Image (tube, rainbow, N blue to C red):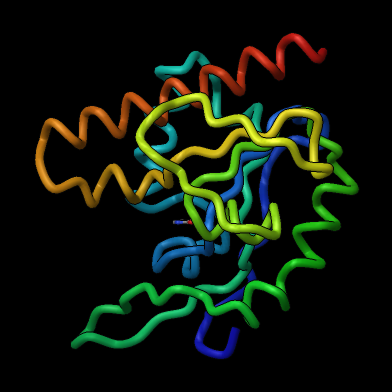
Length: 179
Ligand code: URA
């Protein structure tokens, strides 16, 4: 928390059935105080739209609530949270789950999956990775929107984006059915 501008809490309507979970706020989120408003957020928003979902209807959060970074010239580069930092933030995430009680949780990326599930999960390449967990009736693990940005070439960028859209589509259909 020490180098962050502010705590970035989750955001979304109180009645949201669908919760999307990332790792930690990035540079833009740290300044804005809102989750997923930077480049990864733009990918997420586009994927949600393609999956037929409006962002304003979902609850978006991160397992870690502060931006951890190191300086590189004038830039602030993202640093992965360590196990202790993830553990320190877990009560906040658990409280969000208790208050919202979402029917579907989408864990985006390895950090979100590992901290929410308490075990390592291989995200793999195939869409539709549904896991059993007490955190919600339906839990889907997908890749992090930043993984789309970090794709090594246009073909994998397209494949990763398609995976994200497919998993969000799956989450949407579970959420609709549970209404
Ligand atoms: N990456 C995340 O995991 N969360 C954000 O809010 C932004 C980028």
